[in-house]
Image (cartoon, rainbow over all chains, first blue to last red; front, side, top):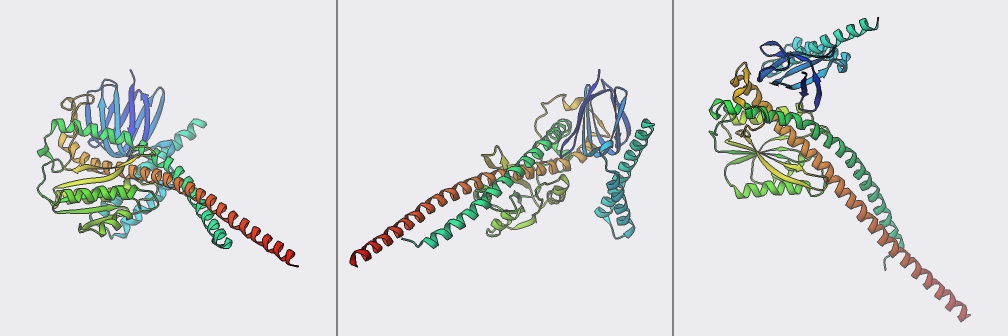
Length: 142
Length: 283
C-alpha cells in the first residue's frame, strides 16, 4: 500500500502524490518512512528528502520544519522545499559565494552570524543535490 | 452658457482620466489574480500548522510555553495591516475605522504596529503610539518578508511588554466583498484537536516540548503571512472595483459635457445665422 505524501511550504504546495517510501532529514538524524508507520510528529533539520516511487527516485532540498506521519499519509511542512530538478545551480553557487563572503568579512554576531551560516548550509545542500542529479542524469543518457 | 473652448478642455481632461483609470483597472485585475493564487497556495501550510498545533496542545498545557501562557503584561498591541498605495476605494478607510472603533471601545494602554503606509498615516493623527512600522512588502510578499515582523512581536510578548497582541486586516471574501477583521495573535489559542488522529497517540521527536518550541514562532509568522496575503488580494480587488466605477463615471461625464458642448455650438450657429439674416434684410 502506498503512502500519500504532501510537501507544503508557507508559500505553496510543493508536492502531492502517492509514493512507496520517504526518507527524511530529521533534526535527530535521518529517518525512513514506510507504509503503516506509527503516528509521529517530528522536527526536521536541513537536508535531503528522498522519495521512492515505483522504480524512480526524487529528491528535495528541505530546510527546517516538521513532518507529521500517519499510517498512510505523510505531510512535510518545510520552510523551503526545492525539487532537485528545479534547483538553479548557478544561483545556489552565487548564494554560497555570498554567504562565504559574509562569514569571511567577520563583522557578524548573534542573529546575523546564524543567518549567514544557515544561508551557507542551505546553499551547500542545494548544490550537492543539484550536482548529484546532474551526474545521474548524464550517466543515464550514456 | 459656458464657452465652448472651456467645455472642450474639460472633455479632454475627463478623457485622460478615463484612460488612466481604465489602465489601473486592468492592472489591478491581473495583480488580483496573482494575489488570489498566492493566498490559495499558502492555505495548505497554514491549515496544517493549525492541525499540528492542536495535536501538540492536546498533549501539553498552556504552562509549557510562554507563547501559550496567560499574559503577564496588561498592555495591548495591535498589528494593523493596510496598503502602501491609495486609490483602492473604501478599503483602508474601512479597516482604519474598524481599528479606531476598537481603540475607543476598549480604552487602556496600547500601541500599534503598522504594516502599510496608509495605516501609519492615519494612526499618526491619533494619540496611540506607533511602536514600529513596516512597509514595502511589494506586490508579491514572501514568507521571508514577514519574519522580522513576527520576530518583533514575539519578542515584545515574551518580554512581558504586552499582554495581548491582535491582528487587524482586511479579509478577502470575494472580489466585491472585503471585510476588516480582528484575530488574537498572542497568546496563541490552539483550535480544538478534532482533526485526524488525537494528539496523544503521536510519537513526538525529539519531544513534545521541542516540537512546540519550533512550531510556535512559525505559527505566528504563518498567521501574519496569511493576513498580509489576504490584505493584498483585498487591495487589488477593491482597487479594481473602484477604478471600474471611476471609468464609468468618467464616461458619463464625457457624455454630459459633449451634449453641453453641442448645445453651445448649436446656439452659436443659430445666433450667427440670425445675425446674417438680419444684416441681409437691413441692406
